Structures are given as C-alpha cells and as structure tokens.
Image (cartoon, rainbow, N blue to C red; front, side):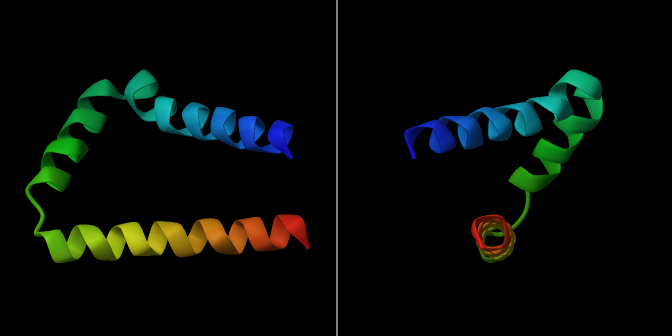
Length: 62
C-alpha cells in the first residue's frame, strides 16, 4: 500500500513538472489566467479533477 502511494505521488510530480519543463512561458500564462478566474470556476475545475482522479483510481483498482 505504501509503495503504491509513493508511486502515485511520483507520477503526479512528473505530470505536474512537464508543463514548466517543456513550455515555461505557456505555463506561466496559463497560471496567470487561472489566477484571474472567479472562485466558483476554480472550484468547478477542482471538482472535475477530483472526479476524474476517482474514476481513474476506480478503474485501476477494479
């Protein structure tokens, strides 16, 4: 179980690091635009990401 959690964290860090590594200017613009969005939109985006993660985890574990 602990091994799987560390693997998931490692994969998340790889995925999160690809944006600034491959396209730093585009990543900076995207972060700047996201910071301008209203809270309700950010919550909706966050909720969609959580649901997508749950669906992926469900299919992986089943």
